[in-house]
Length: 221
Image (cartoon, rainbow, N blue to C red; front, top):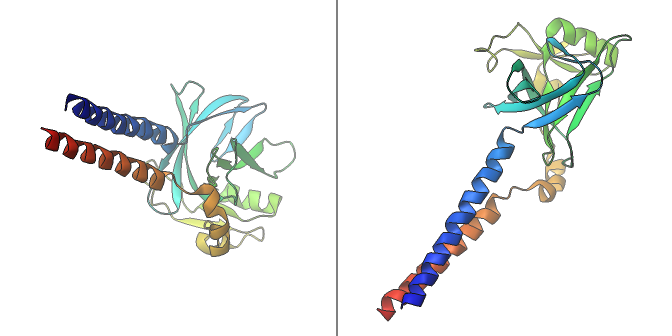
């Protein structure tokens, strides 16, 4: 009987340990913390970053936008907080990707989007409206823009538009594809499916095994 009780305790311990290991692993990727090194100055919304190493993190909010925080290398100083909308790639990249826009000559490269390793959803940066007009014309692409200068309290609600190379303003959801099509979703899903179902199956199996062993222990007593 003692051997069976010991087996129950071991099984429960394994289940608890698995849960403790899984949660931190997901917590580490929740904010998509990424260290990025630039070998020359780059432009992000409202700021020029000097050449150097920076830490990017994300504060997801409801809807189709994200809040990106850019820190110094050791994350002791917050340099800027900017707004972004979802961007995506059909295949999740295996390493950090920083996409740049084509910009005017003699100006720093302008960051378009940031993709965290293992995620096919990234963040396209939203620029102040006046700068978005310039970028749209220079790069010949649609650029998401803030209609008014946001404050820390209005980043989640500031109205956004999409600026075309012809200086037209359109709704973001009409001019910029922030969600994959059904066909693209079907193709990408097997490659980017969440680990949650596997975690649930494993946890359920561990609990079930513990219950069965417990019943055997009660019968033996």
